[in-house]
Image (cartoon, rainbow, N blue to C red; front, side, top):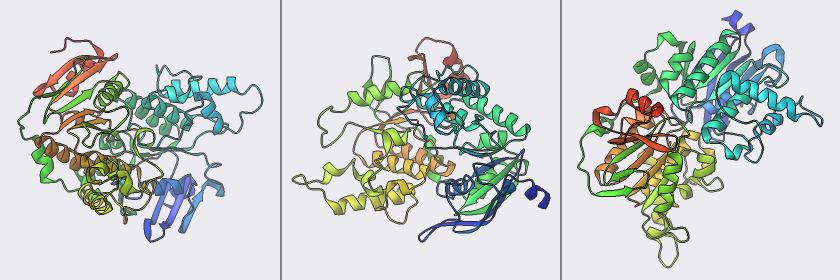
Length: 474
């Protein structure tokens, strides 16, 4: 252990971080050495983001010690972070975003080497990516933005990366692109680099991790080689207990009349959960956006909206960052309880308290800023906002980004329960685990529907087949 610690890129000894009365991290000891790929898992609010912010130097510990190689800073030790909440500047090009974190790029001719470096990094990680270094970031899909952020994390930038922290790096990537990243992670660690890999997709953790660390309530509750865990054992270590409601999610429901029909052929009935699948960036998000706009007023919202939207891209399309948790939840129901234009504050507080408890938002006070929450808990706020609304159609654009396995199961059960009450869900996801929750699935390819799958035909094999080969829509 001492030999590993002496060779470590970073070592934490009884590190703690407190935010007022909240103990986000409570006495964590951990070392990361060359060749390590540490899978860091735990439910939302377990302390993962706080831990990595100590490791990357963004936060100082309230107590304990953090020591980097040769006594240097995180930056000098080659520590890099790829954030779950993408940190790119949308009005700059891909190459210009690299320049922000590349101190050696100076002078009037810096753009050419910046283009070459980011292109080389993208090529190494994501062969066939098709991303132009001169493209402005706000013109890229969320999957492409995530690829750019990852490529910047691994790029040389004057000094080689030694430890790269990947926080939910595949949350917006389809399976093929995610596999490219996982292969690069394996190669990077085999060559002497190190990775801290945070993911709620447990299959990915087992694919790449050499060691798994489980956090719960700010403490490490389990740590051992990846081979020492089973999938169920890992879930148990995190403290998840499957709900009976999740098991009941497979029960048959009686569907009502058709409530959605688009020119593309996308349709849905009352009480139906309809999935949109296929490779990322093939028109699913655009189809949902058009559908939502067609069911929404462009100038005045009615008292009872027809549709509500759950965004997967939280910073851009979801949270209201200057508002409290309460206001972010209640904004969808303010008109229902208002009289003469005045908000019923008691009803608003009751709605927020009900959904805080029902969906498990980890906060002491719903009056706290929404940005005080972890990314996964922010996503819970968006679900609460949507499900608190009286809208009969719920449109979800890859909404489970960064949501832990336990919360996913609870949300699946909630979706099924709401569908049983006659609500209709249209759900785009890149995860097969989520698509198989659906009653019917439309697979998209090149902006068009390539297949419609139902029942036993909703399998990963048939989805992949339809993603690569156009078929007749049944």
